[in-house]
Image (tube, rainbow, N blue to C red; front, side):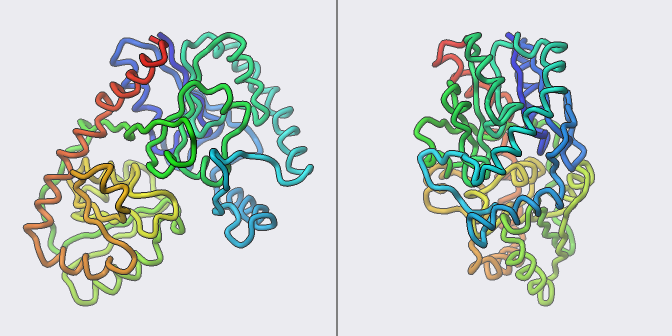
Length: 361
C-alpha cells in the first residue's frame, strides 16, 4: 500500500514519524510540503511555493488583515459553526486565493505528474489542506475513488474552518486536540505519534532545579503568565528558569534534557491540555506542568501532568520545587505514560483500525 501526506510544513517532525510507522508495517509512505518549517525538520518533497511562509512578517500581516473583520483578536478569533467553514471575507481575498492557485499550478502540476501523486492508495491532508484553496486536486482524487484523510491540529479548524470541497471529500477526519471533537460532527481522536525509543529519559535532579518553557507562540501558551511566575519564583527558591525560543530542534531537545520541569501552557488559548512540546518532555522523563480542564482529566484520568491554571501556577510550582520526591515520582510516571499512549507504533495501530473500519485495507 502507498500512503501520501500533503502538508503546509513539517511543523514538529510528525511527518517523519508517520512515515516510519507506515514503513514498519511494510507500506510505502511519502510526504510533500508546501514550504519549509522555521525549524530544521525534514521538509520531504518541498515545493517552496511563494506567497506563504511561517515567518513573523507573514503571520503578522495576516493577523492585521483579519483584525479588520474579526475584531481585536484577528487571526486568533475562533469561528462559529459545526464545523466552522472557511470563506473569504472580501472579493479581494477571494481574488488573492484564485491568483495564488493559478500561480502555484505552474509548479504543482509538474510535481504531481513527475512523482505520480495521483497513484497513492490513501492520501492524508494535514491541516485539512491540499495544494489549492479551491480543492481541485481533491476533486481529481475523488474521481479516482482515492480515500482521503484530513488531520486537524487546532487553529486550522478553530480559526480558519474546513474547506468545503475538502471536507465533503474526506472519508476520515482525525485530531489530537480534544476540543476539536466538539467542533466537527465526524472526527476521531488520535494521540500524537512519537518515537519514544529515540529519547533517553533523564531521572537526575539538578541543583538548582531547572524549569523550562518552550513556546512556539507566546499568546497561545500563556507565556506572559508563565514567565512572570517563574521569575518571581527564582527570587526565593533554588531554581533556574530557562526560556527556549527560536532554536533548532536538536538544540531544544538538548536543553530540555538538562531540565527537570517543563511548563507547557496555561489559559488554554491554543487548545486544551498539551501538545508535542509536552510529549517530548515526557519521553525525556521531565515533570510536565500544564492546564487541564475537567473534560481532559476525564479523558485521560491516568495522566502524569501537574495540573495548574494561571491563578495556581506560582503556588503549585513553589510547593513542587520544595518536594524533590514528588518531582522524581512525576518524572518516572511521565516516561511510562507517554510510551503507553504516544509511541508511534501504538498510535499507528489505532490509525490502521480506522482504515480497516472504512474498508480501505
